[in-house]
Length: 436
Ligand code: UDX
Image (cartoon, rainbow, N blue to C red; front, side, top):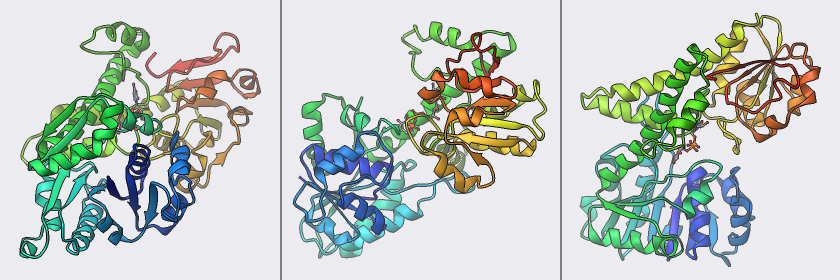
Protein backbone atom coordinates (compact mmCIF):
# COMPACT_ATOMS: atom_id res chain seq x y z
CA UNK A 1 0.00 0.00 0.00
CA UNK A 2 0.95 3.64 -0.39
CA UNK A 3 1.26 5.05 3.16
CA UNK A 4 2.21 8.52 4.35
CA UNK A 5 3.42 9.49 7.80
CA UNK A 6 3.09 13.10 8.94
CA UNK A 7 5.75 13.83 11.55
CA UNK A 8 9.23 12.37 11.70
CA UNK A 9 10.15 12.28 15.36
CA UNK A 10 10.81 9.20 17.55
CA UNK A 11 7.49 7.63 16.54
CA UNK A 12 7.00 8.86 12.95
CA UNK A 13 10.47 7.89 11.77
CA UNK A 14 10.30 4.46 13.38
CA UNK A 15 6.81 3.77 11.98
CA UNK A 16 7.83 4.96 8.49
CA UNK A 17 10.93 2.76 8.43
CA UNK A 18 9.04 -0.28 9.73
CA UNK A 19 6.17 0.11 7.25
CA UNK A 20 8.74 0.35 4.44
CA UNK A 21 10.42 -2.79 5.75
CA UNK A 22 7.04 -4.53 5.67
CA UNK A 23 6.75 -3.73 1.95
CA UNK A 24 4.66 -0.56 1.88
CA UNK A 25 5.62 2.44 -0.25
CA UNK A 26 6.10 5.10 2.44
CA UNK A 27 6.34 8.88 2.34
CA UNK A 28 7.43 10.65 5.52
CA UNK A 29 6.27 14.28 5.62
CA UNK A 30 7.99 16.70 7.99
CA UNK A 31 8.34 20.49 8.09
CA UNK A 32 12.02 20.23 9.08
CA UNK A 33 14.12 20.15 5.90
CA UNK A 34 17.18 18.87 7.78
CA UNK A 35 15.24 15.83 8.98
CA UNK A 36 13.94 15.23 5.44
CA UNK A 37 17.45 15.49 4.01
CA UNK A 38 18.86 13.15 6.67
CA UNK A 39 16.32 10.44 5.87
CA UNK A 40 16.72 10.84 2.08
CA UNK A 41 20.45 10.31 2.44
CA UNK A 42 19.66 7.02 4.13
CA UNK A 43 20.47 8.11 7.68
CA UNK A 44 18.41 8.17 10.89
CA UNK A 45 17.49 11.59 12.34
CA UNK A 46 17.20 10.10 15.84
CA UNK A 47 19.20 7.67 18.00
CA UNK A 48 17.28 4.37 17.92
CA UNK A 49 18.67 0.83 17.84
CA UNK A 50 18.28 -0.70 14.35
CA UNK A 51 16.80 2.40 12.72
CA UNK A 52 19.90 3.46 10.71
CA UNK A 53 19.99 0.03 9.06
CA UNK A 54 16.31 0.19 8.08
CA UNK A 55 16.55 3.70 6.69
CA UNK A 56 19.74 2.89 4.83
CA UNK A 57 18.02 -0.13 3.29
CA UNK A 58 14.83 1.64 2.24
CA UNK A 59 15.35 5.38 1.77
CA UNK A 60 16.44 7.37 -1.27
CA UNK A 61 15.58 10.86 -2.44
CA UNK A 62 14.97 9.74 -6.00
CA UNK A 63 11.99 7.69 -4.89
CA UNK A 64 13.48 4.48 -6.27
CA UNK A 65 13.02 2.74 -2.95
CA UNK A 66 10.22 2.27 -0.46
CA UNK A 67 10.88 5.20 1.84
CA UNK A 68 11.26 8.84 0.98
CA UNK A 69 10.86 12.02 3.00
CA UNK A 70 9.54 15.41 1.93
CA UNK A 71 8.34 18.72 3.34
CA UNK A 72 5.51 18.80 0.80
CA UNK A 73 2.11 17.79 2.22
CA UNK A 74 0.84 17.23 -1.34
CA UNK A 75 2.83 14.00 -1.32
CA UNK A 76 0.02 12.45 0.75
CA UNK A 77 -2.26 12.73 -2.32
CA UNK A 78 -0.38 9.82 -3.89
CA UNK A 79 -1.05 7.62 -0.85
CA UNK A 80 -4.08 5.75 0.53
CA UNK A 81 -3.57 6.09 4.29
CA UNK A 82 -1.90 8.81 6.33
CA UNK A 83 -0.69 8.36 9.92
CA UNK A 84 -0.50 11.49 12.07
CA UNK A 85 2.59 11.14 14.27
CA UNK A 86 2.94 14.70 15.52
CA UNK A 87 4.09 15.79 19.00
CA UNK A 88 1.49 16.31 21.73
CA UNK A 89 3.70 17.96 24.37
CA UNK A 90 2.72 18.83 27.92
CA UNK A 91 1.43 22.35 28.55
CA UNK A 92 2.57 24.22 31.68
CA UNK A 93 -0.57 23.15 33.58
CA UNK A 94 0.06 19.48 32.74
CA UNK A 95 -2.64 19.35 30.08
CA UNK A 96 -2.03 18.05 26.59
CA UNK A 97 -0.92 20.69 24.08
CA UNK A 98 -2.75 19.88 20.81
CA UNK A 99 -1.53 22.94 18.88
CA UNK A 100 0.98 21.06 16.70
CA UNK A 101 -1.47 18.21 16.12
CA UNK A 102 -4.29 20.56 15.14
CA UNK A 103 -2.04 22.57 12.81
CA UNK A 104 -0.92 19.35 11.12
CA UNK A 105 -4.49 18.07 10.81
CA UNK A 106 -5.61 21.41 9.38
CA UNK A 107 -2.84 21.36 6.77
CA UNK A 108 -3.66 17.74 5.97
CA UNK A 109 -7.35 18.56 5.66
CA UNK A 110 -6.57 21.40 3.27
CA UNK A 111 -4.42 19.08 1.18
CA UNK A 112 -6.96 16.25 1.07
CA UNK A 113 -9.61 18.57 -0.34
CA UNK A 114 -7.65 18.24 -3.62
CA UNK A 115 -8.18 14.47 -3.60
CA UNK A 116 -11.21 13.05 -5.42
CA UNK A 117 -11.22 9.52 -4.04
CA UNK A 118 -11.40 8.35 -0.47
CA UNK A 119 -8.52 8.71 1.96
CA UNK A 120 -8.00 7.43 5.51
CA UNK A 121 -6.20 9.37 8.23
CA UNK A 122 -5.06 7.53 11.35
CA UNK A 123 -4.10 9.37 14.53
CA UNK A 124 -1.08 7.62 16.06
CA UNK A 125 -0.01 10.35 18.44
CA UNK A 126 -0.99 10.02 22.08
CA UNK A 127 -4.14 12.12 22.51
CA UNK A 128 -6.57 12.24 25.44
CA UNK A 129 -9.99 10.60 25.03
CA UNK A 130 -12.37 12.23 22.52
CA UNK A 131 -9.59 14.33 20.88
CA UNK A 132 -9.75 12.50 17.55
CA UNK A 133 -13.53 12.79 17.17
CA UNK A 134 -13.89 16.32 18.57
CA UNK A 135 -10.70 18.09 17.47
CA UNK A 136 -9.01 16.18 14.64
CA UNK A 137 -11.81 14.69 12.52
CA UNK A 138 -13.58 18.07 12.02
CA UNK A 139 -10.35 19.49 10.55
CA UNK A 140 -10.20 16.61 8.07
CA UNK A 141 -13.85 16.42 7.11
CA UNK A 142 -15.12 19.95 6.74
CA UNK A 143 -18.91 19.57 6.49
CA UNK A 144 -19.10 22.53 4.10
CA UNK A 145 -16.99 20.58 1.60
CA UNK A 146 -18.92 17.34 1.72
CA UNK A 147 -20.38 17.84 -1.73
CA UNK A 148 -17.13 18.26 -3.71
CA UNK A 149 -14.60 16.01 -2.00
CA UNK A 150 -14.52 12.34 -1.05
CA UNK A 151 -14.94 11.61 2.65
CA UNK A 152 -11.87 11.17 4.83
CA UNK A 153 -12.02 8.13 7.08
CA UNK A 154 -10.56 8.81 10.55
CA UNK A 155 -9.00 6.15 12.76
CA UNK A 156 -6.90 5.95 15.92
CA UNK A 157 -4.01 3.51 16.35
CA UNK A 158 -1.92 4.11 19.49
CA UNK A 159 1.72 3.06 19.60
CA UNK A 160 3.35 1.19 22.48
CA UNK A 161 6.98 1.73 21.48
CA UNK A 162 9.74 1.95 24.07
CA UNK A 163 12.73 4.11 23.27
CA UNK A 164 15.75 1.96 22.60
CA UNK A 165 13.61 -1.00 21.49
CA UNK A 166 11.10 0.81 19.26
CA UNK A 167 11.86 -1.20 16.09
CA UNK A 168 11.51 -4.49 17.97
CA UNK A 169 8.36 -3.30 19.73
CA UNK A 170 6.76 -2.23 16.43
CA UNK A 171 7.58 -5.50 14.65
CA UNK A 172 6.66 -7.66 17.68
CA UNK A 173 3.61 -5.97 19.21
CA UNK A 174 1.72 -7.57 22.08
CA UNK A 175 -1.45 -6.10 20.54
CA UNK A 176 -2.56 -3.91 17.63
CA UNK A 177 -5.30 -1.49 18.66
CA UNK A 178 -7.50 -0.26 15.77
CA UNK A 179 -9.90 2.47 16.77
CA UNK A 180 -12.51 3.54 14.21
CA UNK A 181 -16.13 4.57 14.10
CA UNK A 182 -16.80 3.17 10.61
CA UNK A 183 -16.17 -0.18 8.93
CA UNK A 184 -14.34 1.11 5.84
CA UNK A 185 -11.74 2.92 7.97
CA UNK A 186 -11.24 -0.21 10.04
CA UNK A 187 -10.72 -2.23 6.83
CA UNK A 188 -8.11 0.26 5.61
CA UNK A 189 -6.27 0.01 8.93
CA UNK A 190 -6.38 -3.79 8.77
CA UNK A 191 -4.91 -3.63 5.26
CA UNK A 192 -1.96 -1.57 6.44
CA UNK A 193 -1.21 -3.97 9.29
CA UNK A 194 -1.81 -7.19 7.32
CA UNK A 195 1.86 -7.63 6.38
CA UNK A 196 2.92 -7.19 10.01
CA UNK A 197 0.30 -9.59 11.34
CA UNK A 198 1.28 -12.16 8.67
CA UNK A 199 4.79 -12.28 10.12
CA UNK A 200 3.93 -11.71 13.78
CA UNK A 201 0.69 -13.05 15.17
CA UNK A 202 -0.72 -10.55 17.67
CA UNK A 203 -4.25 -9.94 18.96
CA UNK A 204 -6.06 -7.15 17.10
CA UNK A 205 -8.22 -5.00 19.38
CA UNK A 206 -11.00 -3.46 17.31
CA UNK A 207 -12.69 -0.61 19.15
CA UNK A 208 -13.94 2.94 18.79
CA UNK A 209 -11.84 6.08 18.66
CA UNK A 210 -12.01 7.17 22.29
CA UNK A 211 -11.43 3.66 23.67
CA UNK A 212 -8.29 3.39 21.53
CA UNK A 213 -7.12 6.76 22.88
CA UNK A 214 -7.79 5.70 26.48
CA UNK A 215 -6.07 2.33 26.01
CA UNK A 216 -2.80 4.13 25.38
CA UNK A 217 -3.10 6.26 28.52
CA UNK A 218 -4.23 3.32 30.62
CA UNK A 219 -1.24 1.28 29.42
CA UNK A 220 1.26 3.98 30.34
CA UNK A 221 -0.47 5.04 33.54
CA UNK A 222 -0.54 1.43 34.74
CA UNK A 223 3.15 0.89 33.98
CA UNK A 224 4.15 4.20 35.57
CA UNK A 225 2.04 3.39 38.63
CA UNK A 226 3.63 -0.05 38.88
CA UNK A 227 7.08 1.56 39.02
CA UNK A 228 5.92 4.12 41.58
CA UNK A 229 4.38 1.36 43.68
CA UNK A 230 7.62 -0.65 43.71
CA UNK A 231 9.41 2.58 44.59
CA UNK A 232 6.98 3.19 47.47
CA UNK A 233 7.60 -0.39 48.64
CA UNK A 234 11.33 0.12 48.01
CA UNK A 235 11.35 3.22 50.19
CA UNK A 236 9.66 1.22 52.99
CA UNK A 237 12.23 -1.58 52.54
CA UNK A 238 15.03 0.97 52.91
CA UNK A 239 13.57 2.07 56.24
CA UNK A 240 13.73 -1.54 57.44
CA UNK A 241 17.16 -2.26 55.88
CA UNK A 242 15.54 -4.75 53.50
CA UNK A 243 16.69 -5.23 49.89
CA UNK A 244 13.70 -4.21 47.72
CA UNK A 245 15.10 -6.27 44.82
CA UNK A 246 14.89 -9.47 46.84
CA UNK A 247 11.27 -8.61 47.67
CA UNK A 248 10.60 -7.73 44.00
CA UNK A 249 12.07 -11.04 42.81
CA UNK A 250 9.76 -12.89 45.20
CA UNK A 251 6.52 -11.04 44.39
CA UNK A 252 7.34 -11.12 40.64
CA UNK A 253 6.81 -14.90 40.79
CA UNK A 254 3.10 -14.19 41.23
CA UNK A 255 1.91 -14.14 37.64
CA UNK A 256 -0.75 -11.61 38.63
CA UNK A 257 2.10 -9.20 39.38
CA UNK A 258 4.72 -10.31 36.82
CA UNK A 259 8.46 -9.72 37.05
CA UNK A 260 8.73 -6.69 34.77
CA UNK A 261 8.69 -3.07 35.90
CA UNK A 262 9.70 -3.95 39.47
CA UNK A 263 13.09 -2.19 39.40
CA UNK A 264 12.90 0.31 42.26
CA UNK A 265 15.21 3.32 42.22
CA UNK A 266 15.15 6.83 40.81
CA UNK A 267 11.91 6.20 38.90
CA UNK A 268 10.65 7.18 35.50
CA UNK A 269 11.55 9.91 33.03
CA UNK A 270 11.33 10.07 29.27
CA UNK A 271 8.89 11.69 26.87
CA UNK A 272 5.90 9.50 27.76
CA UNK A 273 5.27 8.52 31.37
CA UNK A 274 5.66 12.06 32.79
CA UNK A 275 3.65 13.67 29.99
CA UNK A 276 0.94 11.02 29.69
CA UNK A 277 0.26 10.61 33.42
CA UNK A 278 -0.15 14.38 33.83
CA UNK A 279 -2.26 14.70 30.68
CA UNK A 280 -4.76 12.02 31.70
CA UNK A 281 -4.87 13.37 35.27
CA UNK A 282 -5.64 16.83 33.91
CA UNK A 283 -8.25 15.48 31.49
CA UNK A 284 -9.90 13.50 34.30
CA UNK A 285 -9.90 16.50 36.63
CA UNK A 286 -11.54 18.54 33.87
CA UNK A 287 -14.47 16.10 34.08
CA UNK A 288 -14.65 16.54 37.86
CA UNK A 289 -12.94 13.25 38.80
CA UNK A 290 -9.77 13.36 40.93
CA UNK A 291 -7.52 10.35 40.06
CA UNK A 292 -5.95 9.84 43.50
CA UNK A 293 -3.80 6.84 42.55
CA UNK A 294 -2.27 8.51 39.51
CA UNK A 295 -1.57 11.68 41.47
CA UNK A 296 0.17 9.55 44.09
CA UNK A 297 2.21 7.76 41.40
CA UNK A 298 3.47 11.12 40.12
CA UNK A 299 4.19 12.32 43.67
CA UNK A 300 6.22 9.22 44.56
CA UNK A 301 8.17 9.48 41.31
CA UNK A 302 8.91 13.17 41.82
CA UNK A 303 10.30 12.45 45.29
CA UNK A 304 12.91 9.84 44.37
CA UNK A 305 15.76 12.16 43.22
CA UNK A 306 15.67 14.12 46.50
CA UNK A 307 15.72 10.83 48.45
CA UNK A 308 18.95 9.93 46.63
CA UNK A 309 20.47 13.31 47.51
CA UNK A 310 19.38 12.97 51.15
CA UNK A 311 21.23 9.64 51.36
CA UNK A 312 24.30 11.50 50.06
CA UNK A 313 23.77 14.33 52.57
CA UNK A 314 23.79 11.80 55.42
CA UNK A 315 27.38 10.86 54.51
CA UNK A 316 28.91 13.98 53.03
CA UNK A 317 28.40 17.75 52.99
CA UNK A 318 28.95 18.22 49.26
CA UNK A 319 29.42 22.01 49.47
CA UNK A 320 32.54 22.65 47.36
CA UNK A 321 33.07 18.92 46.80
CA UNK A 322 33.57 17.24 43.40
CA UNK A 323 30.63 14.89 42.79
CA UNK A 324 30.43 12.53 39.81
CA UNK A 325 27.04 11.94 38.18
CA UNK A 326 27.16 8.70 36.19
CA UNK A 327 24.34 8.56 33.63
CA UNK A 328 22.30 11.42 32.13
CA UNK A 329 19.85 9.73 29.68
CA UNK A 330 16.40 8.88 31.10
CA UNK A 331 17.25 5.21 30.64
CA UNK A 332 20.03 3.17 29.04
CA UNK A 333 20.05 2.69 25.25
CA UNK A 334 18.97 6.23 24.36
CA UNK A 335 20.40 9.76 24.19
CA UNK A 336 17.03 11.18 25.28
CA UNK A 337 17.23 13.37 28.40
CA UNK A 338 13.57 14.46 28.42
CA UNK A 339 12.40 14.40 32.05
CA UNK A 340 15.54 12.39 32.91
CA UNK A 341 16.06 11.84 36.64
CA UNK A 342 19.57 13.26 36.19
CA UNK A 343 18.04 16.74 35.80
CA UNK A 344 16.62 17.10 39.35
CA UNK A 345 19.71 15.31 40.70
CA UNK A 346 22.07 17.85 39.08
CA UNK A 347 19.78 20.72 40.14
CA UNK A 348 19.90 19.39 43.73
CA UNK A 349 23.70 19.15 43.67
CA UNK A 350 23.95 22.71 42.34
CA UNK A 351 21.67 23.90 45.17
CA UNK A 352 24.17 22.21 47.54
CA UNK A 353 27.01 24.05 45.81
CA UNK A 354 28.70 20.82 44.73
CA UNK A 355 31.14 20.82 41.83
CA UNK A 356 29.43 18.42 39.37
CA UNK A 357 31.26 16.28 36.84
CA UNK A 358 28.86 14.31 34.61
CA UNK A 359 29.31 11.38 32.26
CA UNK A 360 27.00 9.58 29.85
CA UNK A 361 28.04 7.43 26.85
CA UNK A 362 25.64 9.16 24.44
CA UNK A 363 23.54 11.86 26.16
CA UNK A 364 26.20 14.36 27.28
CA UNK A 365 25.78 16.62 24.25
CA UNK A 366 22.03 16.81 24.88
CA UNK A 367 22.64 17.79 28.51
CA UNK A 368 25.28 20.47 27.77
CA UNK A 369 22.53 22.82 26.58
CA UNK A 370 20.61 22.31 29.79
CA UNK A 371 23.60 22.53 32.14
CA UNK A 372 26.41 24.41 30.33
CA UNK A 373 28.26 25.18 33.58
CA UNK A 374 29.00 21.69 34.82
CA UNK A 375 32.01 19.59 33.77
CA UNK A 376 31.51 16.72 31.32
CA UNK A 377 33.96 13.81 31.45
CA UNK A 378 34.87 11.68 28.44
CA UNK A 379 34.59 8.48 30.47
CA UNK A 380 33.15 7.20 33.74
CA UNK A 381 36.73 6.68 34.98
CA UNK A 382 37.57 10.33 34.29
CA UNK A 383 34.42 11.44 36.13
CA UNK A 384 35.42 9.37 39.18
CA UNK A 385 38.96 10.78 39.34
CA UNK A 386 39.33 12.99 42.46
CA UNK A 387 35.56 12.85 43.11
CA UNK A 388 34.45 12.80 46.77
CA UNK A 389 31.25 10.97 45.82
CA UNK A 390 29.62 9.31 42.83
CA UNK A 391 25.89 9.04 42.05
CA UNK A 392 24.64 6.27 39.72
CA UNK A 393 21.67 7.81 37.88
CA UNK A 394 21.28 5.71 34.68
CA UNK A 395 22.01 2.00 34.64
CA UNK A 396 24.32 1.84 31.62
CA UNK A 397 25.92 -1.61 31.34
CA UNK A 398 29.42 -0.11 31.30
CA UNK A 399 29.02 1.09 34.90
CA UNK A 400 28.81 -2.52 36.02
CA UNK A 401 32.32 -3.03 34.64
CA UNK A 402 33.91 -0.20 36.65
CA UNK A 403 36.63 -1.50 38.97
CA UNK A 404 40.07 0.04 39.51
CA UNK A 405 38.69 3.47 38.52
CA UNK A 406 37.19 3.74 42.01
CA UNK A 407 40.74 3.89 43.43
CA UNK A 408 41.19 7.34 41.84
CA UNK A 409 38.33 8.83 43.86
CA UNK A 410 39.18 11.27 46.66
CA UNK A 411 36.61 9.32 48.73
CA UNK A 412 35.11 6.04 47.51
CA UNK A 413 31.54 7.03 48.34
CA UNK A 414 28.90 5.73 45.90
CA UNK A 415 25.15 6.39 46.19
CA UNK A 416 23.35 4.16 43.68
CA UNK A 417 19.94 5.11 42.26
CA UNK A 418 19.68 2.24 39.76
CA UNK A 419 21.02 -0.96 41.40
CA UNK A 420 24.19 -1.42 39.35
CA UNK A 421 26.41 -4.37 40.26
CA UNK A 422 29.59 -2.73 41.68
CA UNK A 423 32.77 -4.14 43.31
CA UNK A 424 31.66 -2.90 46.74
CA UNK A 425 33.76 -5.25 48.90
CA UNK A 426 36.61 -5.69 46.40
CA UNK A 427 37.21 -1.94 46.22
CA UNK A 428 36.12 -1.07 49.74
CA UNK A 429 33.41 1.27 48.56
CA UNK A 430 31.25 3.27 50.96
CA UNK A 431 28.06 2.18 49.18
CA UNK A 432 24.46 3.24 49.71
CA UNK A 433 21.54 1.98 47.61
CA UNK A 434 18.38 4.04 47.15
CA UNK A 435 15.95 1.21 47.92
CA UNK A 436 18.28 -1.61 48.95
C1 UDX B 1 7.21 3.80 27.77
C2 UDX B 1 6.30 2.60 27.59
O1 UDX B 1 6.97 1.42 28.03
C3 UDX B 1 5.93 2.44 26.11
O2 UDX B 1 5.03 1.36 25.95
C4 UDX B 1 5.27 3.74 25.65
O3 UDX B 1 4.91 3.65 24.28
C5 UDX B 1 6.22 4.90 25.86
O4 UDX B 1 6.59 5.00 27.24
P1 UDX B 1 9.75 4.40 27.47
O5 UDX B 1 9.34 5.64 28.18
O6 UDX B 1 10.55 4.49 26.22
O7 UDX B 1 8.39 3.55 27.08
O8 UDX B 1 10.61 3.53 28.47
P2 UDX B 1 10.35 2.34 29.49
O9 UDX B 1 11.32 1.29 29.17
O10 UDX B 1 8.93 1.99 29.55
O11 UDX B 1 10.79 3.02 30.90
C6 UDX B 1 10.08 4.15 31.31
C7 UDX B 1 10.78 4.71 32.53
O12 UDX B 1 10.53 3.87 33.66
C8 UDX B 1 12.30 4.84 32.39
O13 UDX B 1 12.72 6.08 32.94
C9 UDX B 1 12.83 3.69 33.24
O14 UDX B 1 14.09 4.02 33.83
C10 UDX B 1 11.76 3.57 34.31
N1 UDX B 1 11.64 2.23 34.86
C11 UDX B 1 11.20 1.21 34.07
C12 UDX B 1 11.94 2.02 36.21
O15 UDX B 1 12.34 2.93 36.91
N2 UDX B 1 11.79 0.76 36.73
C13 UDX B 1 11.36 -0.28 35.97
O16 UDX B 1 11.26 -1.40 36.50
C14 UDX B 1 11.06 -0.06 34.59
